[in-house]
Length: 188
Image (cartoon, rainbow, N blue to C red; front, side, top):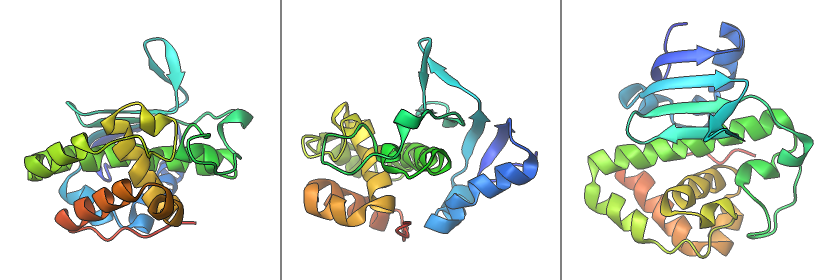
């Protein structure tokens, strides 16, 4: 398939389904950015394994490859927002398809973070030093990288909650997006 936003795209979906899925990049305002700073590879697969454990997605900071699992169970979505009582922003989606899209946005957050490292290493370093203790999700509490990606996903899907419940994360995200010259739309 002809690459869009990546040097290579591997997908178990049809070409049309893959293009439709990746349309979220344009919807939130990342299309031009991803053309200018493409991923090495996007893989849309039935299952993503890390150390023999199934995960929803993965981004490799070294290779800039992104993998998304197209499988979700009923426990992976449909949760109500309660700060730090939810696993991830993707678990707040109403259905499996929306949860998978939110995982893509989370992984794209990692790519933004990686590009920031190249563009402004001082600002990248500052993002790594922001306390994760106010993260909206349990996943965001795990590390500075996961906090950044979950904060980006929250900025896209739950901006008000992010502003109210993680003011440092909100300020970090608005600063990073300004530095990268990005205007990100809130998707509901």
